[in-house]
Length: 101
Image (cartoon, rainbow, N blue to C red; front, side):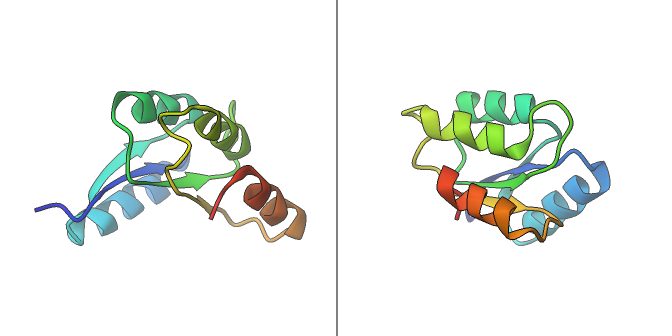
C-alpha cells in the first residue's frame, strides 16, 4: 500500500530520477515531471498530496508554477516544498510569500 502521492518536479533528469527512486523505495507513489508545464498538467489530471518543486527551470520557473497551483481552487491546498540549490534569502522569502512550506 502506497504511503502517499507525491509529484516531483525538476528539469535535471538525474535529480528527478534519484528523488523518484528514493521516494518509491519508501513506498510513496512518486510521479515525475521535468517541466513546469508538465507539472501543471499532472496536478490537473490527478492532484498529488505533496509537490516537491525545483525553482530554477527553463521556460516556466518554480515560482510561476506555484502561483498557478495556488490560484486554482482544486490545487491551492496542496503543500509545496521547494527543492533548490538557491541560498539567497530573497528567493526563500518569495517562495514563502507564494505559499511554499
